[in-house]
Image (cartoon, rainbow over all chains, first blue to last red; front, side, top):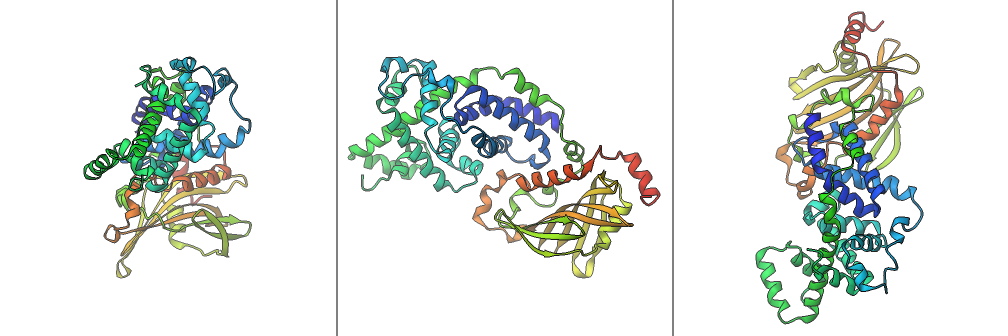
Length: 174
Length: 267
């Protein structure tokens, strides 16, 4: 069974990395988080019921590690690598339409969201989970996911103002 | 925007409304410019984050992550028990896990035992118990790891199965065994995991974690709908593993060593 789970886990890696990046906002941290989650999952494989979804379980492990350890260990503010993205508001509009910078700008804005809003946003809008699936990962009611998600998107919109519209419609992004 | 709140508009954008409600929202949007602007805001925000993160999916996974997934399991106990610990779905489908079920955690504390009721994540000492368990004692004394020791009390409608999972020694060189115990009662099942150590010829429970399962016929709790995502016992088992890893000294005993010990009554 373990070998089959390992194969499933490898297939999940791209989604896990994307989810972790949504939470940490920095690539190295995201991969550290995914690595810790994979190690924990393999050591605790007996807790996973094979007839349930591996992705939900892995996402929940990432969420738990991030909340329990990550946040408490890194008390410092924004990440150095994102400082290169320039000021968030008032910077050159054309500059941020570059795809490379879009991720940095979005990550930087997301860092300003409360943890629970960032989780809801990452699960639903980044990963594409349904509200119900996200509620299962977060272990909260669907209504709670919705209110956190709506507040996250409203706040993100305020942080990025017209940039979000420009970026979303700019042809660089789908 | 009196009839359409933000969350409804967001659910409309995210395709979470049923077709009838979505059509109602569309009709209302036609005459509500403010709501249309909110819809656009939700569309833009979703497209922005989705588009920003999607390139990650096309990147090959770094070698260190592939190595982590393919690494041998490092926990001292987990890999051994993987094959042994019975999937509880064998008895009941996963969906009957009672969310609100009380979990009792008993941790051996010095000479006596500290009982704790673990409910809603709160661990509270409540009473001291040191009750002997003759069936458990017999099971651990005579049964190999992975084998099931079964006893029935038909008149009471009770069936008890005890399966030792792992045998090891602790720091004071006592033999200790982790076990899974299931108690089938008329309207459900109680599953517990525990660890007991042999002292002066008796297996003394050191830690016990129990969960009550209700019978499928008692289902009907809407909160159960999501429980298919809940791994059995989740974090509680993680805490339990820690107890065992702390108790255990060296490696667990192999089947031959265990059989020899059972043969000579653990002396």
